[in-house]
Amino acid sequence: MVHRNPVHVRFFVLSCFVLLSILAHAQSDSVTVNISITNQITGKPIEATLNWYLPETVKQVEWGKYTIGLDGDKEELLTITKPGYFDSEVKIDYETVKQNPLQEIQLQPGIPQLHISVLDAVTNQPLTSAIDLFTLDEATEIFSEEVSVAPYIIDLEYDQAHVLQVRAPGYFSFKDTIDYKRVFDGRVRKKEIRLVPLKLGSKISLNNIHFEPNQAELTDFAKLMLVELSHVLSQKTKMVLEISAYTDDVGTDEYNLELSRKRALSVKNYLVEKGARPEQLPTKGFGEGSPVVPNTNDANRALNRRVEFRIVNLNE
Image (tube, rainbow, N blue to C red; front, side, top):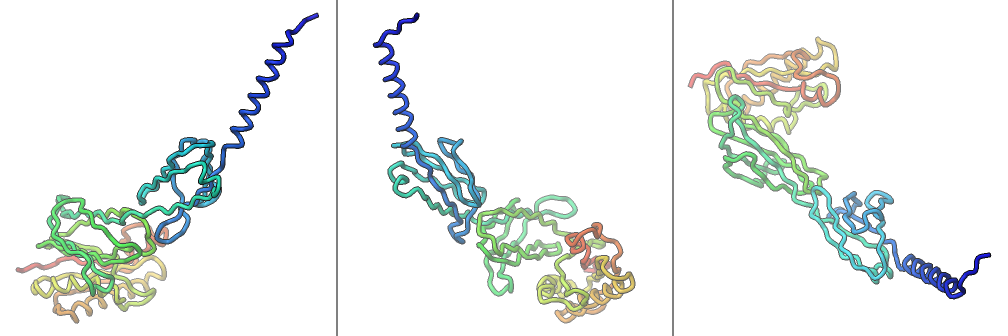
């Protein structure tokens, strides 16, 4: 028969009681904090990364909503990060969240940026060029600078589309849209622009000469893209620039061939209207021939619907 010391038994029971009390007290002192993260401009919920001293308690419950755990009598720093946004640091203290466990945090978007590299299309060497940024109707100039570094960084505006124009002496100019509509964060878009020298045989391909489906008339946007080329032709009156038009593979071969011929003629007529001489602009239509990429999806078909210009005579 084993005899137990009554003092030891009482001490063991008391120790267990104290331990259970401490655990119960610790559990009652911890709280769950509800975190709601939104875009400061739009107010829409966004996903982000939460850096917290108890990472195992961080849980995403739905888009832009999280829960974290906080021990009693604690004050800790919550850091929230997301690409395209400024980091946010928020102090989370026990007494405050015990009264109001919901923390609404608005992340400030970064500045949307365009990183431009302008290169010679033949040598791949950086070029000094004039870069201009306009409103979509080209009525207002947003940015204008002579640039010699690559890449060059331009800060843009939220929810805007602009016309980008790049020029360098002795080269075809470049013009295209930079579309940041519905963009409300600091995302970066990289654009490498290869300017083609104004030399005999040089060829440029434009995918932004848009036409309405099954139509040969130039859209207003297409005319906007052709204005700079009309300036080159009016300055270099002996230049002969062959216009070649291409379609995608939607439709019969005969239909696409005729459509491409009409589209090439529309480009010519517009450039003549802007000051070029008709004899400077021979035209050809190639239909769906010579695609630059396979016509396997809509994005590829858009690349194949293009107008190309080739210098066939350059008597200075």
